[in-house]
Length: 220
Image (tube, rainbow, N blue to C red; front, side):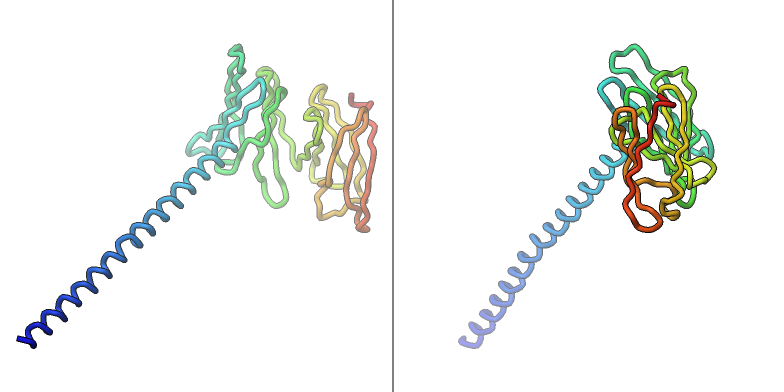
């Protein structure tokens, strides 16, 4: 009788051990699954937010939406600009690089779409809120921090000359930057508009900080 009691006691303890083991595994498995699902959801939401930011832009007067046209190697995007007042809506087909184009800025004058064009080259297309104004495109574009009416850009890969462009009248001014670091490909550290001047901040090929003030009266 004692032997039977001991035998059943071992069986009972063995079942209890297995049961506890199974119970401990269930919540761990569910927790891991929950974490994986949560991580996946966060990634999807983050990706959607990123896509929203590069294909949509809004300012106080206009909304711009960039859409890729599938299976095209050229004229691969259409850009729609809508007035918030509801008095203007138009779409333009733009010849920008498939899978690699995005909106960089939209203001009351234009929407800017950019794409890489090989090596250090980065091209930008400007679609104006005046639907009758032709599209303009420039390479190695640099923005003026406090005035969206002006940009600087490089023509024909002549990196020793910085071209200042005024969008309000399409006038341009060439600035000698031959003392800048060549491998910067004409990129300034900063461009700031100050009254009738444009102030250039950049590093020279002798590793010195340069501040150059350019009078813009000729293109105002």
